[in-house]
Amino acid sequence: MIAENLKNVKSKIPDGVTLVAVSKTKPASDIELLYNEGQRVFGENKVQELVDKYEVLPKDIEWHLIGHLQTNKVKYIAPFVSLIHSIDSFKLLKEVDKEAKKQNRIVNCLLQFHIASEDTKFGFSIDEVKDLLSSNEFVEMQNVSIVGVMGMASFTDDEEEVRNEFRTLESYFNVLKSHYFKFNVNFKEISMGMSGDYEIAIEEGSTMVRVGSSIFGTR
Ligand SMILES: *Cc1c(COP(=O)(O)O)cnc(C)c1O
Image (tube, rainbow, N blue to C red; front, side, top):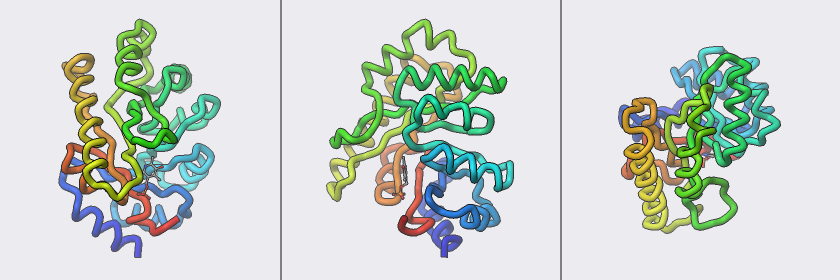
């Protein structure tokens, strides 16, 4: 029962940590069921699926895009997306700024870091992000708001490794906060933790967990 699963996951998440219910591959009816239980924040990793679900479901849902985003698809989500977790290139951020401007919106974004030992996962290095945030081009952007960082830990049973990767992400957040966002109250999110590791992520400072299969079942 997914409503039971939701309750169970929520009971392990402290106040102040946002639960993003990751509904990818699952039908809109499942989302509606959890909506009726009070859940409002949902995450999807594919643009087309996100748009299709947005169109049929209640408009007070906060939709988060959590997966790799191609620049040519930004325009489809710019009108309504409430947070993009997966900004992994300067080119992508510029595109979001451009499309958000057309919609007369400011789109909230997280900078995705590569923290896992596997090299299959997308994301910036800390030096790339420092260059980005120091650039004039970034400073002049008016339609994106960087509200924090995101990362995915390695897919491994080695709890210490996962914990260390989360610690690395938290340290990047702190460096960026003190150097670039000291007086910006909006820069406050650390999106880390999935079904297999969200409890560790919370211990290491996560403010936002992205949980799919523990709520909706296996995909
Ligand atoms: C699928 C996905 C999740 C959720 O994964 P589960 O293991 O099912 O909780 C979280 N984050 C991202 C980026 C994902 O693609």
